[in-house]
Image (cartoon, rainbow, N blue to C red):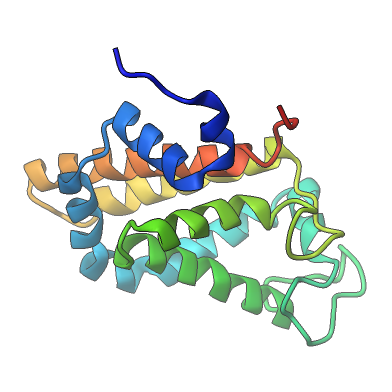
Length: 192
């Protein structure tokens, strides 16, 4: 039986990633499948981003997080939830961030820097980083990750990959999104 330092899981991101990857079973072949999908997925990123934002704008509880100034955005902020549109300059700014995130998942090596990035993705949706006024509730983050997962699955299914590659790619992304979800939810847990 392998011994795991549970305190270290909470304090060492690389150790946490290694544990999750090993437990979930993400392998070098999985990471190759994720990177191998980059060429086919890259042209579809704008459509994925649009689908995510269309969904976020369907609910007041998710749309409201886009009214306050976003970290790094310097232009005009929306006046209200009612006047905020998908064409607003700040939403275009946020869409660029989501697009870069999706591209990063399929292009960057899964090294210590990438692990820190996955953790930051979770952290920036809380007051712990980025905009202190931004505090996206965990239920909304879970809903978002569920939607992104389904959208990504549907996109991969639409790539017309051979069946073996399709299955490997779907499984690889499923494993990765579970790891990403852990790096999100850890910022919502009470400190041990």
